[in-house]
Amino acid sequence: MKSGGLVAVPNRGGDGAPILDEAEGESFAMLQPFVGIVLGDSDAQESGTLYITTRRLVWLSDRDIGKGYAVDFLSLSMHAISRDLEAYPSPCVYCQVCFQGLCLLGVE
Image 1 (cartoon, rainbow, N blue to C red):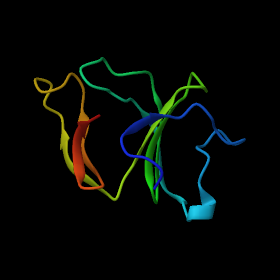
Image 2: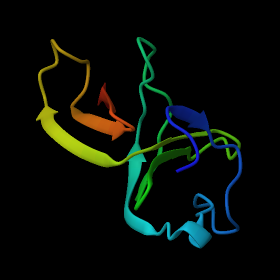
Image 3: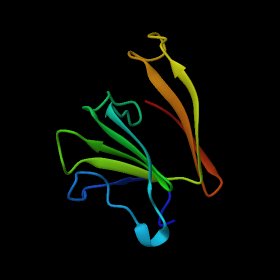
C-alpha cells in the first residue's frame, strides 16, 4: 500500500472511475452511486460515487471531475445504518477503516 490516511484523488480513468493500481492487484469490488461525503464537522458535499476496491475506499464527485478522496485500508467494516435525525440530519452509514494498526470511525 502506498499511503495511509485520506488523500485527494484529482485524476480519473477515461470511464470516469478511479485509476486502479492493477500492477499491485487492485480491482473493483463495489460501486454505489448517489453518495454524499462528510469530512470532519463540515456539511455533506455534493453527490458522488463511492467505489470500494480491493485496496481503497474512493469517493468521486459527480459534478466536479477534479474532486475526489481515497483512503487505503486493510479492513473495512460497516457498523450501522442510522436514521436518527437527532444524531445526523440525514440517514447515514457508520464505517470503520483500518490501516497499519490505526482504525478510523467515520459517518456518511
